[in-house]
Amino acid sequence: MSGGEICEHTVIVVQRDHTVLEAAKLMRQHRVCDLQVVEERDGERIPLGIITDHDLVVEIMAPELDYMVITVGDVIDLHAL
Image 1: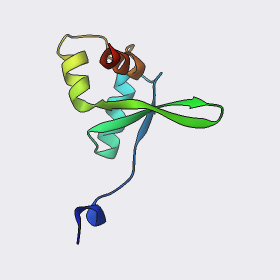
Image 2: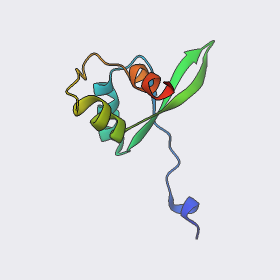
Image 3: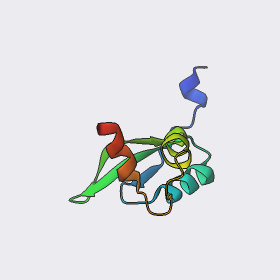
Image 4: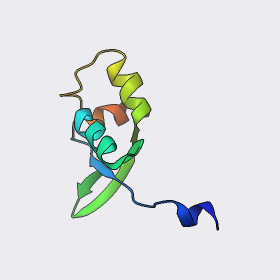
């Protein structure tokens, strides 16, 4: 049996305009360490990147930023710089 046969393949997605608090709650609810960031365009989900629990801790919590107003898009935009 291969690893792929026993692993779950569900991808949890979050919209780029959701707050990082909402993203953290989704990670907790689904017991995952990352989320696929998507944007809806013409009825299609376009993948933009991923956000990880590490991103939340290092980029938001450690510098004591306001996790209730910072969006997932703000975080992935940081990675693009």
